[in-house]
Length: 569
Image (cartoon, rainbow, N blue to C red):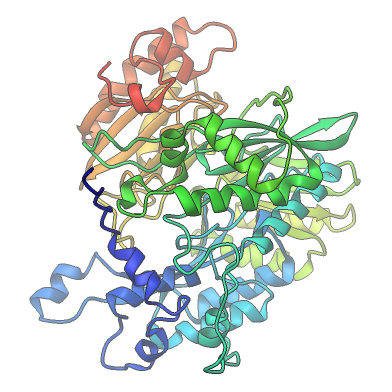
């Protein structure tokens, strides 16, 4: 019998293998003042430390003409488990963004902070001061479990406290054990030559690809649980948390025209008791570690591992590794994926205020001093700040006494007025894309607000301004803003051109399908107008836009991404 030839490992696997547990030559690269960049290999390793090397693509061509190096800078992503931070931590993030970055804060689709525009000479000090604020960037990126998301849930705070603790516990348990992060960024004590790092969960080469974990509390699916590798759905009976339904194998990324890639919704693994949640998390991670594809990074996410192994075999392996009995899933209902805006009083008699932060970008402009206003709120606020999974902000646990002062600050800045906008805009998300993301094929954050403005004219004509319709855009098909779970999804193809996807469910459990390929701004409006007008006239009572586009025959429902996502309508 002929021997089976082993698949060649991807380049990233060699980089990790030779990195000495994520150290590489990062320290030497930081000391090199001849360039604003790090080496390509170290650029891969810094992702595990929460850092992406980028350059300003708006000026790339002009600098090339002048024979100048690219305008390099770095993006640093700060982990915020469950999205909850203190008012003092908000102030520190605000200060660091002004002192070391581009003066803005980005609230991400995964409840993290991002700083953009940090130059290499400021990078180490930035990371140290983030850690001084009792936050960190380790494992915010890279082939590891990333920031654990959790429903902010300001109106069910008793359950939220329990699920928030689980988010923090999973985050801690799955954080890489290597001391490289402390050595490089925090001047930690280096290992003696006789010592060796150990990664008890990840091993020397970590995971085949990134890994994302979320926790949802029905009826809210604001964390988009079906978009993630590992999900926990809180099961509450008689106001008590009795355990979790566990989902596995979700993921948004795909590659244009590559039909072996596809976005996929997670599948139900089953129900587990509360005390078994950490065991399950580790078992799912190690199963992916040992069975994921390390030869092809486009086929390396857990969604493909679950497909290849089969759900039953995957479940059996997780049960074996964890020693946990996985029961039949319990009943639950999701009603929406968006945020509940405005003032809500929680069961603790504290107020919670959810603000709309368009595309998660916190900044000051001449007529809208949002960043300054939130800074002033943080100075007097005794509660917390909660980053939502929809790039919005919850000012949490506001006392009755401080409520008027906080509202006054926000009213004077015009922030409260931003809640009086269309249901479409309030359910929108966009990734950063240009000018900093190296993967972007088209605009996203800078373009989507203007596109929505033009679509709102159609909504006004149709009488749909108040209706909630989920719209999302990304500059490439990696899916950071989860566009494939949007009722109206846009994915960049080239400058000024986008693929238009329709037919996702409002509750986030069905991906959408390609409706039109590579269309321009005006073509988008021309395509959407008749559909929206028809929806306004023909929809059934309670029928959501995504469901209507399927019933009306614009797209076919995608029930199995592997076989149906790429089939033409």
